[in-house]
Length: 562
Ligand code: ARG
Image 1: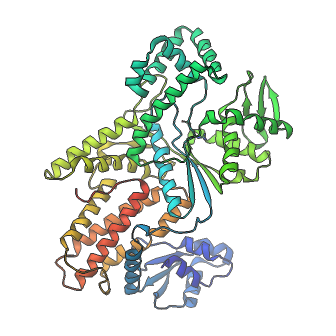
Image 2: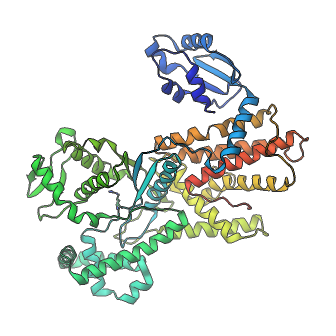
Image 3: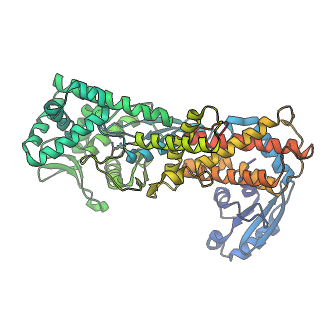
């Protein structure tokens, strides 16, 4: 049962939509007043009455029934008390029935969402800067699929540009097959760094690099083969991380894929009189929209990042006929997206409104930022490995007899990195700290995982007790708090999708874990009298199912024992 919708349906407020009411209904932190509350402040303007009067008026009109047992109006809030037994039965039956599907929906049926995420750069290290786009995108991909959408994961590879000329120049001068074969991206990165160091003294290297790039573009066999090889090596390295993080893509069409798809875009821009010349370059003037111009072609005729992105958007629309196309990319690129979205709109593409830049903040380690050119870069792989190592040390200390230690440590360590990037509102800059991320008592994934292990242990010890369909009686305060929160999971998933905010699910999981632990500590489960015990076991199982579903959406594994 969707309580918010149920209540909203019955509130007779003319001039305010049911959806708007449902969205405004919240679960108050202190439930002594009510289990759900509608703040009436928002409606004061439309209804031309004070919030207190609105609440009072609606209270008189609300039809109390077997679901909502009491309504009160306090300080501009309309408070609802839910029939406890009804809610308990509702939630436990539903979770028991739906299991792994609890929280899923069909709202996306028939709709396609393209998601551009991770989008790594070939031959460049997969560093901490790619963490957020990868795990945010991965989570959104799972969330949208869970809600019935057809999600299309796209890795828009950065595989085009003069840097590949630089790399070939560096490889030809200082590299060899063996070195790169063994060293992978790290070796390529070192070559790249060396190129920049040496080019500072010898600028003629830059010309050489440009010449090599031109060769790639012209399809020179040798250069192309090297480039393909670099690409293969990068993807091999990156795939190791994708595997760890459970990340999938349906397409790896990167920037170079659009090489032959840009001319039609340029022609169309010309045809629509949008292209103007400026100091030799071809641009679209966006001054009227308060933006600097979108450069389409440089003075030497070469294309830009934006040109390729426009071709990509058009290609995606044609190929997938998306309802939305999301770009999970750092906020540093805000202007880039605004610009090319606008240009597509000016071209008359009505679907330009369906392009969304899902911007997120920076992740850094305690020791500061990095640059690929200078070489002081932190590889994501190293961060994950370090986190897994630390997790192993903590686990062994806490539980020396733990079975499958390595496997558990992997789930805990990887989870900590993922959760670290997903716990905060995505636009916030975050500083990753190993100790904080691995704090068993913090707002962390390991805390949630530990809670799951606790629930598993309770259920394992209850072997032989038949609780699956145990009768439901009036829940105590702790049980009721937990039940209410479990009932809110489907709404949380929907809100996370709507706002592109997996953090809602991360926070929700911590919330559930806290409420479960309060219940676990305050109430006996296995020692409770018969009747109560069975219902508590049902509640424990329902909590575990919900937490597992939440963590799975985020891409975090759940060990049975810790
Ligand atoms: N490769 C780019 C970078 O690392 C991100 C690409 C994002 N996607 C896009 N369609 N522009 O900055």
